[in-house]
Length: 439
Image (cartoon, rainbow, N blue to C red):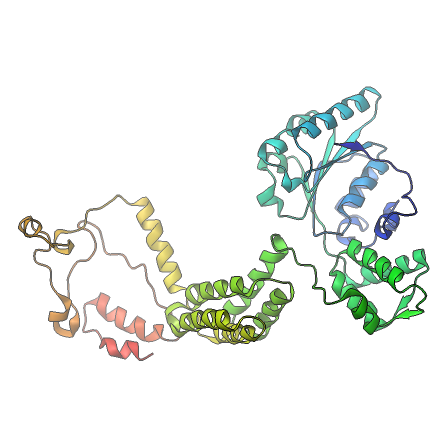
């Protein structure tokens, strides 16, 4: 059910993060790139003219808070919908509330939390009312709106990107939480561990501190030992289906591609630390071996496949060392995307070209009738030719100009492959194939 949000102070039993929710813009910690002097959201707050917007950022960075503060700044009704639980019925009821407010001469802000959870039809239901000005739409999402929000709705809203809370902001929030609860202080090391555990999520930081203060009531100071004893072995926040997940994969892939084994190891360990299934990581390593190394070092693919087999045999944590070894090898291997580029070029050619018949001399001829029809006629068996190369033979369809999809790079084994290919394409005497196979 959509609801008109109350502006009363949170109840004393509310979670600490709710009790410390900023009541004014000046109480907001972080997001200086949006709320600093002259920045976009600060200007919107000061103008008194709210605009429809998408607030995109990780959990616990103030998306809901900013939407509430916007409603307060322009003295508008604030109607909230949870896209996790809501549907078109809730959107209709929000429209009714906005119409009643309009009749009283008041503006309305409709805030949709987790807007990416709504399907296309549900998102489309907002469009006529946003266009008519019945209400200002604010959507909050942890997912990339380019993929999760309809283009029509996205075109009518400004996207503001919120960032994870930095260490300074988290320290300030922790101090506020300690003061509000009159709770125990933390040693410097314990505070650093707790902030790292919260991983930029202010809500998680405050609510975890509240739990610690309750568990360790009467303790003058919380040290690392007490922190570990109370929290147990908990992993950092890691959204396995969201942008952080895919961004970290991207960082690993690009570090390998960029031949930086140290950075590649860092992102590999970050993924393990976040709870990613090592089997998923090894599938990506196999892809990297084909896409970014290819024939410059064919051993890379074998290394990745062997790492997958070894991990299946040993499991965690023993098998993870093999994956780390593979990450280092792939990062240090000579790089070539020539096979990847050639494959994409061939796909693009076939997609736009006509369906050409196979030339008669290349057709299969397993029966007498097919031979009588000319299938396989005049085919030159390469192994019977000098150097096992049938010079001048045409392997493309009749009437099609030969294409050079594959262009070896001057790195690793592809140096030798390139030399052989240049002679083959040029019609000269190709070097023996054994020379290429030696690597």
